[in-house]
Image (cartoon, rainbow, N blue to C red; front, side, top):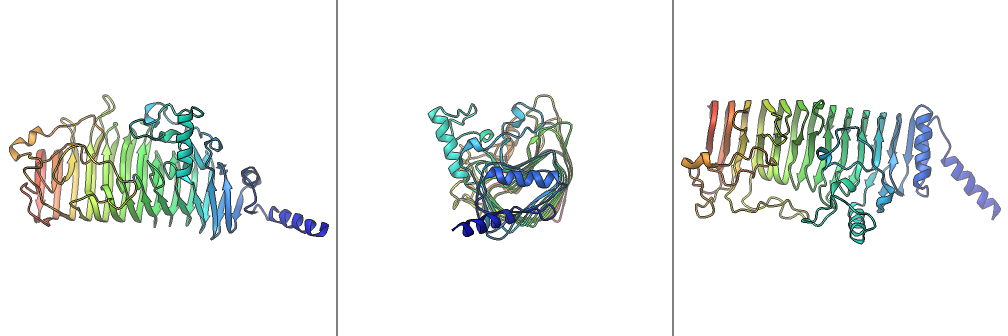
Length: 474
């Protein structure tokens, strides 16, 4: 018996042995032991912590500089369902209302770290439904009050629901190959990070609400490629809360996205700039809102955006570009936008009808919405090219459902300071595109087609200068 105990002790010590700065975890280890491994690897100049096959029940882990977490196939990190196991990570960003949609907690967090990575074929599962319901129950029993609890929608706010990854102020970040599942809030959150590589990730984030797939906030030099995202909110979303910063040099390519909101979106939080954004080779399915949304409503400059080869099947809207002004006197800019090789099919019914967490429908009767590209009075969108675009609409518009005749197009509300969404204007007098407050827009090789009759014209424009139509077909 003593010999067996000695053998077990030797085996455990070997599993903890540093090989260079590499460690190997076993499922019996608790969060404190795993964190000690990460800390030791980082303090020794960096290394790898490998998780072998098995389930690891963990609380919050902090990834430190120079450390790679490697999840072998069959390894699964299961997040604790107790909110007491998650502590806030200070973002260093502007405080106040601007951060009310951004949790500062996460299952795996990092702050101001360099050269960090998460790799392998394993799984990180936040057990988000159980965690969120625990948070909800504790709020109602008075044990853990959420001051921002959403009474109308009967759920705790995003601020108290941890993300899967919460990476803040980090440089040289690599997340590759892993499966990411079931956050109680956003999935992967990156705030003020640079040189980020997200490759071949499989993200299924539909456990609760506000389950974005990937959020990039005020980040620079980011590549997102080969990822599959199924999310109960925006799939891949760029945000900015800092007027002095923004998102620059972002490449999103070869991704497949399903979403209860928009597939790829810039905004709505848009205080800093969005520059040199490339979106290529995106396949969109069963997405409730827009396949692609570009929104400056808080004063951001959005410029030099290229979106090429986007295919959307069963989506609520193909393209939404909005320049608004909801943050006081701060005026934004949208210019130099290139959308090429876009193909989309818009259904008559809800595109996410088969989902358990469906997007919130508007509260008014309407015919099928066109794709809006809209600035506001005295602040126009500039220099937009739509080339090789094909959108199929269902038609079936009825004058009895809602009727906005062409001679009343100026009655469409401006909604200058409202939340941006392609449904924000109510009933619109066209079925293909609605263009408003634009200086310079070219539609080249654009095909708009109907599956059934629609009494409205395909395109309606108001306050548009420099509209060029080349080879437009209906």
